[in-house]
Image (cartoon, rainbow, N blue to C red; front, side, top):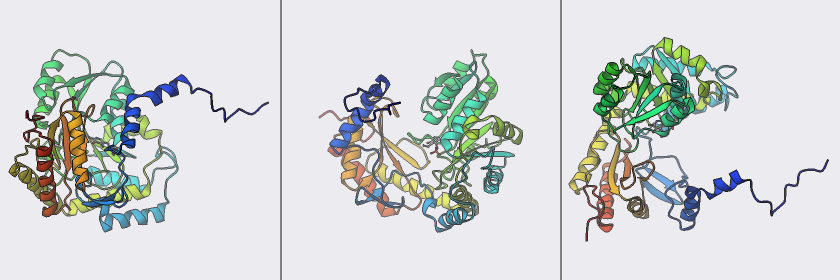
Length: 416
Ligand code: PMP
């Protein structure tokens, strides 16, 4: 038998590969990299703090989800180190089989107690928690009602279930009510406690009423609410008094808890059912000991020191006030994400670029993450930002908006 020829230079790629390489987004990324303007995959060369080394420079970082600064906390880091030394670098298997460490169960116990619920299930990522929950709850003839700003992990879970998805207007429970009133399919409603792009909070009390009236299960993704909203940092569910009422709450460890992984919180019986049925939980390796131990240490710090949430909120207030003082109008919220509407995608990328030139890292949000023409500049606050840093970023944003002749109120280009 002749061995397959691996070096045939002229062989055209299979059509499916050509299509992949020809995707306009890939072509755009290639071009962006050539002209050095790509705002994505920025090379990070240090731990993620208020000042982070990126692409060879010390950068003022307003683009990280390390809201409470716990990713760099010495206690969290040593918990990760000790866990790796004790349990190994990885668990080499699914929790169903050989990967179910006592450490995973300890974190589940701590999480369910933190939320005052009876069950919790730990996943290797927050993405997996949402993917798993949607795909296990929904069947092909069910309905998923999702906010139009919903995170990709939820959309992908609905797609995996091949369920029918319907969108309602952003943060608009009345739109949900109007649409769901006519619908007889069993269904779920999914909202985010704090929206990842716009940073605003969901009116959860009203959503709960609408879900009850429409016989829908309510799921709240608190990826950005954990550690940032509520007196104890449970998320918007705490502020709105629905911790016990939401059917499920999903969280990630990759933001306030400074680690990696995610969880579903709910009632014991339902969580036990999920443990046996959820394919994105069963058919993947368990989260690493270091990540689980870091999340557990961070959770314990958050529980023992609710003052951390207060300090973060003070920083958020300072940034909002500083932006307002310079005429800018961020989308109203009190969560850690402070987004300012810019307008066209091109202007949004330009604004990002001008901030980068001044040594500031933020996140541009352009289509499809934001509706076309409604690009955002997203600033994420860390508890560890200093007041001077907050003033610096506010000054820079005001200058950039002026330089690009953008309306400070977020109405796009000012006519010149
Ligand atoms: N939900 C939301 C709202 C998110 O913003 C994210 C992370 N971007 C996730 C879920 C997924 O979390 P993870 O990073 O842990 O996969």
